[in-house]
Length: 189
Image (tube, rainbow, N blue to C red; front, side):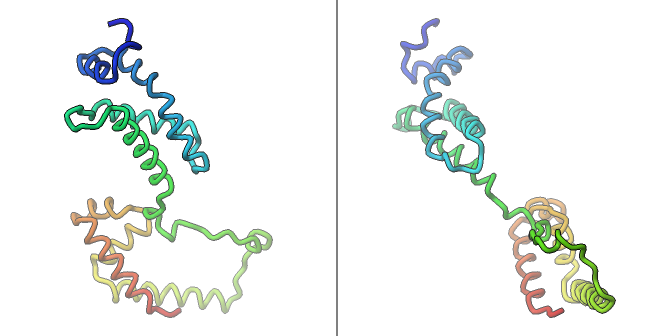
């Protein structure tokens, strides 16, 4: 069919399922303004508007693939929900910091930038003693599994990656991290 503007959403979806590539373009053009309206709700978002539009388009394509009129919702309703969910998911992924270990962040301190940090002999000795005490606590106070989890966590692996490497499930890794935190909470330097 050549004039897709006269077809309903369901007719266009039928054409798409029959392999008509131009029907995909027609449906995307039809829903471009819907994507723009949904993205406009997130004008103060930390992602660029164009990135959010791209995520919305991904949601629209997912809606085209997953829609079934038998479920009772109109395609417009289903597509709007998919577009919004896709944008929200992108924002959550962007904002998520749980996979970044606290040791990978550095506090910004102006005085450290203004002057070169030098340790006195006494401070250097105390720092070495603290590191030595921490090392002893880690090897004596933590199990072999907990030490391995901590080592992988410190170098930046996510719970899922650690679980894969150690042949455990992510919940076991989370439990190990919680035990490590409890054991290290009582440590005084």
